[in-house]
Amino acid sequence: MTTQNPEITQYLQQWKNGNQSALEEMLPFVYNELRLIAKRYRSKEKAEHTFQTTELINEAYLKLIDQSGTDWQNRSHFFAVASRVMRNLLVDHARAKNYQKRGNGAEKVNIDDVALFAEQPDENILALDDALNRLANFDERKARIVELRYFGGLSAEETGEVLGVSEITVKREWLKAKAWLYSELAG
Image (tube, rainbow, N blue to C red):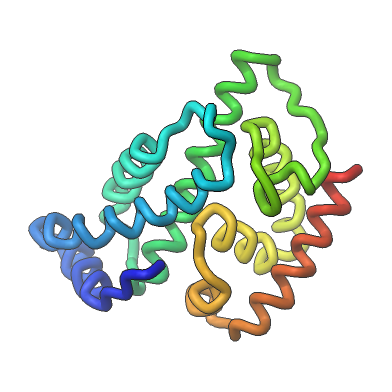
C-alpha cells in the first residue's frame, strides 16, 4: 500500500465509538487503498474475468462498513480484514461461476497455473482456497501470509506489521507456504 495515512487509525477508532462522520471522512483514503489492492489482484488475472475491479471494491467496502462493531486496532488491521473480505468475495464469485459452468467440482491445478505465479481462472481460486483452508488447519500464520500477500496485495513488511512478526519471518514463511501449496496443488 503506497498511501501511508495514520489518520485512518484515528477514523476507525472514532467510527467504532459511533461517529458516523468519521467513516465519511475516511472513505477517500480507504477507497483509494482498496482500489490499489483490487488492481494488484486484477493485474494477475485474465482479461476476460467477469468480476471487475470496481465491483470488487464496492462489494468489499459494503461488507467492511457493515462491520462497524469491529474492534479496529489500526489501519493494518482494517486492511487485513479487507484482504479476507476480498478473498471471500472472489471465492464466492468463482464458486457461483463454476457452479453455473460445470457444477460443483473444481478440477485440481498445478501451482504454476495459480495466480501466485501467473494468470488464473476462477477454478484456480477455488483450488487455492481449498488448499489455504487445509494449510490453515495446521499452520494458520502461513495461510494468513498467503492471504495477505496474495489477496490483500500487502508487501512482506506490511504483512509482518499485521501479524506482529518480522519481515524476514514473513519472507521465509511465504517461501515455505508457496512450496507447500505447490506440492498440494500439483497432486
